[in-house]
Image 1: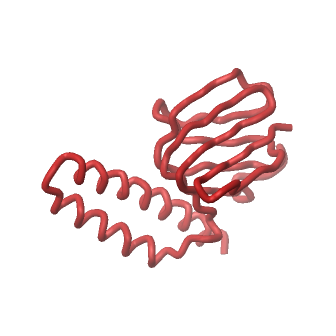
Image 2: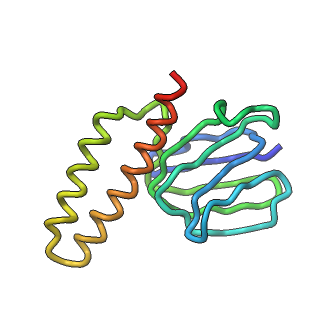
Image 3: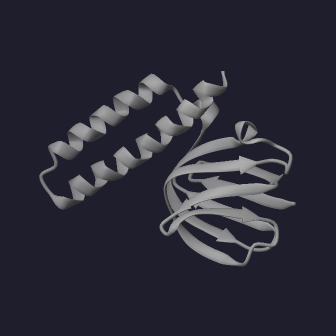
Length: 140
């Protein structure tokens, strides 16, 4: 088995033995299994998916929306450090849509590059949250 630890500014969000973890990195999505080659990579806003056992179908995977961070992989452990990670069970679709609208407005009204990039990052985070919320909605 592979131990996956998801750590945020508010503490440990997830720490369990799993079969597979799919992580969005700056170079694309990676799937991590036990005995993966050692790796340190930057993550981007997106969805982290966790398969608890080999027999679990895709619709039994657990999902988190992250805002980016750093992931460290070795043969038996994946440690992802992110400022924020939201489990699918914590997401409210309507609230995310409102936050996304606000982020788009911020981007449109940005007066400098820093404000523009901050708004763009928020848009990417809220898109990831919407995807995770949609996955949750389809299951119910």
